[in-house]
Image (cartoon, rainbow, N blue to C red; front, side, top):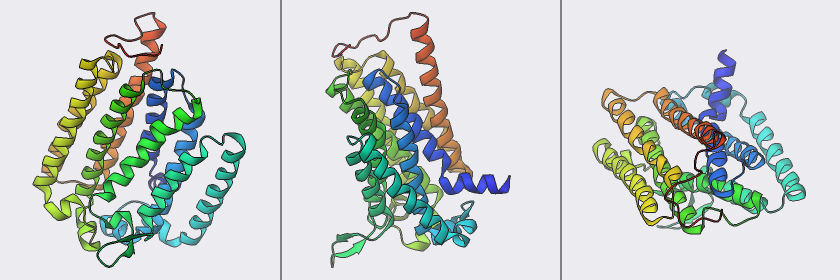
Amino acid sequence: MSFLRDALAIARFHIVLIATLGTLTFGWLMTGRYAVAAAGLCALDWFLVNLFNRLTDLKEDLQNGVPGTERVARGRRLLAWVGGVLLVGSFTASALVHPWLLPFRVLVQALGFAYNYPLIPMPPGWSRRRFKEVYAWKNMSSALIFIVTCFGYPLAWSGRAPRLGWPGTALLALFFFLFELSYEIFYDLRDLPGDREAGVPTFPVVHGVPTSMRIIDGLLLASATVIAVGVGLGWLGLREGLMVVAPLVQWLVYRPRVHRGLGASDGIFLTHLGSAELGLYLVGTAVWLHVGLPANVFLRATRS
């Protein structure tokens, strides 16, 4: 059980799971089909991004007491080889089986490597730094990976314009981008001691906890507003409008946990809560359609 717990922590299974369910959910909303193959590649790519991140963040993870870090330190060389073989092998397979997906996968891994390794020249001095070491980019680069995997992968897999329409798809992506950023800052609140020790300029390190909480509140409000505007314009329907529940639930859950003091399990719990919401949404909409209820309401700009 200890090995299984550490293996799930090393892979950051909670992040892989929510990204995979996000790809299935948004892929279905955009294409009308469950993009299982795209979701599988999403899971693999997030596993690789997280694995390389664990290999480069040993100091912070040890400081923050992240489970599995000792095993990563002991097997660092082997894990690097495993990640490299999976990366090269899966890219080769993608190029042969579904070349349309390959550019999106390359973009995801490029963002991941720029996040984990000092590759990008930055002022002042134009020394190479990681995105993780750059204010705001730490959070934005991770959120961008979510957008590429959850929206780009299923669209590339289907090879079609979204049935939701491009304006509605753009609003849905903006909603998820803002919503996901709130997760990133919540994780930074949890990791504040280690990030401060390592000199990582997260929002909590730079601005403190109260201001960071206000930023999270603003992101949750903004994401809910995007959904409301989309429904009001007819670019999104009631089916997409139900997602406004997620920011409300997150606001109700995260604030009491911050006030009582965050532990390593709090970020995982909040992420699994998001996965449960996506899973419930997928099951609920499938049942809704199965019993013959209207596919969507209030949606005017639709392709189906």
